[in-house]
Amino acid sequence: MTYAQHPLSAAFPAMCAEDFQSLKDSIENIGVQNPVTLFECMVIDGWHRYSAAMELGMDCPTVELGEVDPRDFVLAQNKARRHITQAQLVACASAVFNWRPNGGDQSALSADCTSSKQVADKTGASVRTVEQFREVERKASPEVVEAVKRGEIGLPKAAAIAKLPKEQQAEAIGKPMSASKPKAAEPAEPAYPPPDEDLKEMLLDMQRECESYARRLADWERVMQSEGKSALVTAIKRYEHAEREKALADERAAQAMKQRDRYLRDLKACGKAVGETDIDKVARAVQGFARKQTEEVGHAD
Image 1 (cartoon, rainbow, N blue to C red):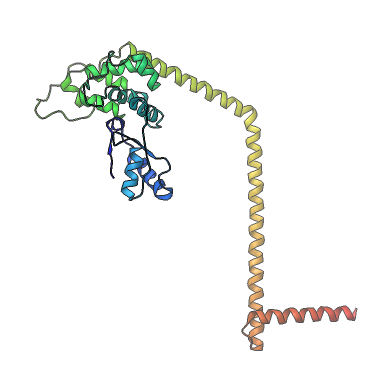
Image 2 (image 1 turned 120 degrees about the horizontal axis):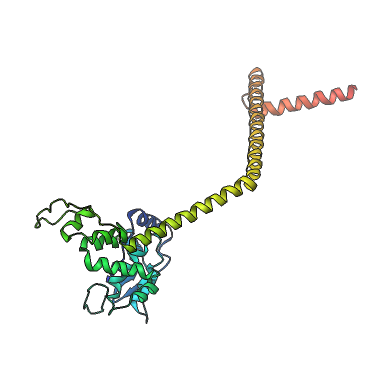
């Protein structure tokens, strides 16, 4: 039996091609380790695992969701994804919180659906991020909102674009305008309006974070100068010593190979002189002769 992707799962961005190929390689090697979750006879969690298994023609274990809120479940499963930003998570939460089992109102995220504080608590985002996305979703064109969901632009840029006339917003994110609309004249003012107070505060946060990283780097450099320098010198000396030892070992090995080749040539010459082609027999004969000579010298002494 084949399954479709549940709308709650489809609310989140798809895995990139490179990551999906890595997932396929893993499943081809060890199979699907974690079963996908079904709800309403559709895949609500594990869609990429399911798709990869289907493409490979392999079995994919499934489990039913059970008695939990499907919206809370799908949000909890996706909030820890490595490549999804807080802005994307809030944007996806808009579709999740407005989903209805039997259809219904799919309007923008609003206070009568759930409060900004509730959304922030469920997604791990800040209340300011939730409020900023709500403003974008109310004022921006669908192309801008979708670009935020896909992670192509961040919320500050989306908020700035949302202040432009609707016919200019698609072009601001690099999307072609609808053919039915005439091309707008070049705006006399800058494409992006001056940053509002939220954007200014966000830029200050970023500046403070950069300054924090700079202080940590300076601390690390001081430690390296005081403590790490001696350790680094010791490590370099050990490396140089190991390199010298390796060079000597390589030289001894080369000399041993030369002696072996010379010994083989001598054995072949002896064998040729007595008409024997088996080198092992010649070697045993030479070793026996050498022992006999040694014994005779010992007796003579």
